[in-house]
Image (cartoon, helix red, strand yellow):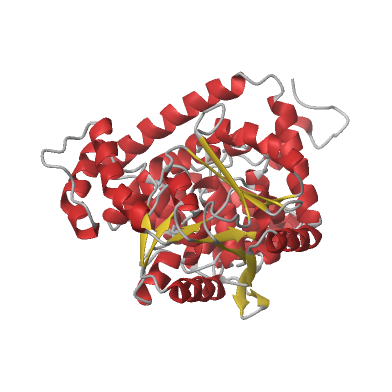
Length: 495
């Protein structure tokens, strides 16, 4: 996985600044509450939602367990249908492959379907370095690109922007990228959408190369599936002469029958729709219909390392619905940028540290970006137990399991932080193993309790600023028991 967002600090620092932005918090609160209320209504319509959720989980787990077999089957099916399959071990290799494929067409621009995988590897930046301009065609991605911004939500990348901000971006930036915004543009949704439609239409009609990801890949036929709501994906997938799709290896499904489950759960969990307005499927190439050259780049980039973790691998079930973001109290207040990754929110807190390793400060901090309330697990349509993985990753970090990659090797490095916590645990172990020392310490603590500070000093100050330290009793339990019961354990507790 490519590096963190440029200049991003660790999550606690970024979140501390984000929560002070009242406009950001207002935008996030309004959007997430609206989306999750609509989702709840859409899910309630399905009487067998729990069964669909369990089916999705089992299909994904089965596929991941047999991933090697299904990937080979997919490659054979895509090749037989006229496509070409490329294998990319990491972001750099994937970017080199795509850049070379675009250069071979002689073109200097591409149109893009919304794709998390291409954002993950930094494809737009890699293309720009080679003189190739990539145009985002999803409305929210267009807003982010024109605003020289970063996406902050999986489903709605511009969720942190309000209508007034979008109008300002369109008015200021559209002319630098193509057709300018109409004169007198207002901030009404219809006018903003029309401005984007006019701006993008000329790009669709002249583009010779399209770049996409995929929501699903069907191993038995080599079919790729993209679901979307605007129609821009359909344009990018059908009009260009060459189509290049960059897809994570975990997006595979064995059969068409398996796809049926996810075409019911994904729309309801993401856009709160019974079905997506546009569901595009393509299998290789067809004479005189759609792109005549199709390339599939299968991306690993840390996924096989994640697959090796028996607890953490469940993150690879994710179908990118973003339901976990919309119910997360931490995301609602901090926003997506604080996560320093294209994958924000609860799923990003467990996926990014596994794909990138936990050597950087931000990746080591992400597993702590949660209250462990469990709301994310309750809404996940493939039953990813995000709190379980968060605790698992925290344990790995505390115990020295900071994982990083050097070339093709996975390296486990000693933890840099948590020295105070480890020292406290060692002291507690020593005291609990020596009853006399423990009794003396308890008596001393009780007799000096009026001198105890209300907040912890040093590194512990941040923890105690939002928590009340427990008040010590005037007398240790052992002394109270000796005084009231005379040390006789047969008397039972005092009445």
